[in-house]
Image (cartoon, rainbow, N blue to C red; front, top):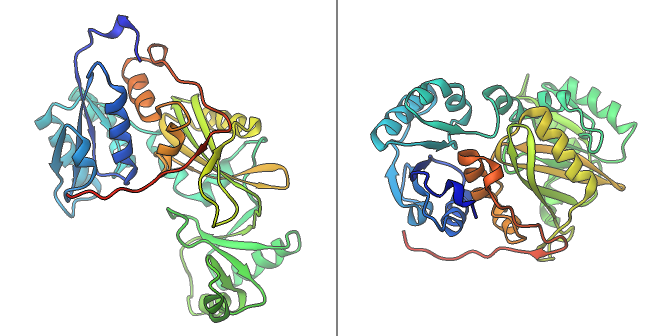
Length: 349
């Protein structure tokens, strides 16, 4: 809901370029909340996609473009389609860096942070070194590029922690993460059906075949519950946050909204420190009774629909607040303790 003082504002043409699948949810939620029809939503992709079913307008993107060539295409797209607000997906860092070029066309770019911040958040080795968050410090981690560095890091950290893990410094969806098992081989783990775990001896044997490899982090393993927090920020000010506590058992269904005081305080601290804006997601995991920071995703999470089921319509709040100021946006209270889940549906493209 928005105040009557802003109802006379003209319709804004809002473009979501190619993005993660959560953009379908975002566009659906914005249309649901946009009762005054203030926004004309455009979505583009290289192939017909589900988000195109719910947007007001769908446009094909040319395949194969990346980097500066993609940014040039985006500028041309904005001119052609009279875009007012550009919600960044693909190449968000480069698009944000070119903000002045878009502004010259009258286009406002909605991004989760500055170009420098986006680059930092995608590199966990560099990011962890900058974190100052007493409410939820990151796990202790050492960056490695060779077998010798791995062995030294493993020996150092193993002296302090009973379990260690390894993951790439740059990755999404948790790809490449593995708990290190000192007793079993990869074959034994495979036969036992153990996921996200790798045998220490096999890991070392594989690394020995590589003179040097991309940055990997050897880390303490956090065994507690995981929290995924969907947030909306206003250039460093945390506007609203919905923490979802994930079940520890893979057989359990649903997640529970838990307005954990330390996690909310950590999100506010991180938002201010990194100047976060629009929709973003913060991941935590407990060890003992203390939450620890895993990562900040400068985008909507795949589970944002579950957060919105607990009250606030986060994509709409982010867009309307960016457009007209958050003082004009009514934010529904979060239903603390709500149990939420999501289901998939079939759709013909």
